[in-house]
Length: 309
Ligand SMILES: Cc1cc2nc3c(=O)[nH]c(=O)nc-3n(C[C@H](O)[C@H](O)[C@H](O)COP(=O)(O)OP(=O)(O)OC[C@H]3O[C@@H](n4cnc5c(N)ncnc54)[C@H](O)[C@@H]3O)c2cc1C
Image 1 (cartoon, rainbow, N blue to C red):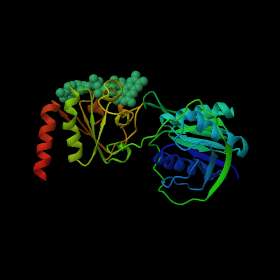
Image 2 (image 1 turned 90 degrees about the vertical axis):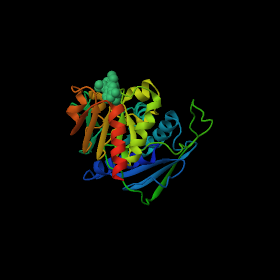
Image 3 (image 1 turned 135 degrees about the vertical axis):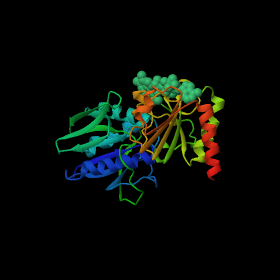
């Protein structure tokens, strides 16, 4: 039986892509194989089995090495499709892999399916204003947008093995550091307090961080705060080029609401915003709005929350 392969260097993203693969396989007579490089990970689940690709490459190795190892195994085992998480590394692995296998590659797919002859998908274009339907003959490679599918919960899966031997790579991994506490997980946060350029200086961010904590939520931001100013790490940045989030409550503070930002949070259940400009587009994407200065509104909000206990 032909398989749909799944790979992501991130456990949680792999579980999302596995959910997408399960949908693709359903009804098309395919099974799902979650790829592991070098060693099986406990937090990674599969609705089918796992394929452990053994050799010199490990989960999390460079895109060049990972794509070479997967390509070697795919050349022999001939999967119907390979789905990867659209993370920074995942995008690079996908394009390299498609080039090595000489097959088509679709990017940032939000809904993926197959009729057995082609892989088809939907992708959001023009900052979420238009949904494009794309398709590619099988075999094909695609990246699945992070946050588009709910994660499969971890469970045990049968593991088969494929030895691909030593894969040479121009990148040499010198050391690895695990991300320490403090790393934000915006995708599972029920409440997100999001900071924009209305925040005047980095030293003012703790005020919003405290508010997020008091609301049992996480701190997100618009792109300028992470990519341009470097006040927060990239994983906090929400939008077209950042994380897609769907919290119960999204509180946008000092964010103008440009299309590229809204594209990443428009599916939040309730959106509230604080902005001095009554015409800020963010208000149009909001259920509730406060026209006011964040330096007055945020302390007042914190005081009100503290009074409620
Ligand atoms: C290809 C491309 C991709 C992009 N991807 C993303 C993306 O993924 N995510 C993203 O966020 N952006 C993205 N951008 C950038 C985007 O277009 C906007 O420039 C950005 O979202 C603006 O960030 P902002 O709203 O924080 O800042 P601004 O647009 O500068 O808005 C600041 C807002 O704060 C308000 N304000 C000012 N002072 C106060 C105060 N004291 N109290 C309350 N409100 C106040 C202002 O009225 C204003 O509305 C992308 C751009 C491009 C070209």
